[in-house]
Image (cartoon, rainbow, N blue to C red; front, side):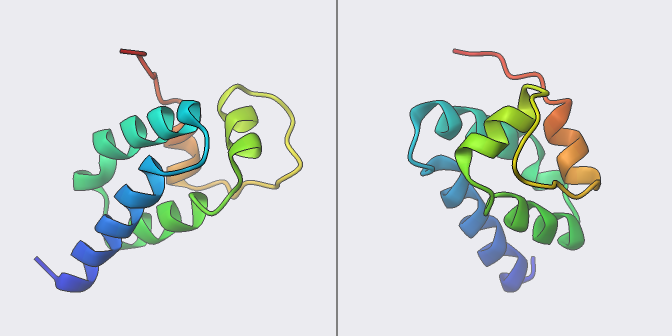
Length: 88
């Protein structure tokens, strides 16, 4: 596979696992693990941008609470909104 895409995936995986709060580490790493291998390059770019949003706004967005951040209406934000996280 393309090394550019592999490097992008590695950055995304790392960023999803090391957020700053354990709750978001777990939620985002589970989300990324579920979808990363099936995403196209444009979706990976969207996901990398999505992960730049702070934890508080991502958590609110996931839980359907009004946020201070205007999320793009794209496949990644829709997947995340509908992601069913099962705590282990």
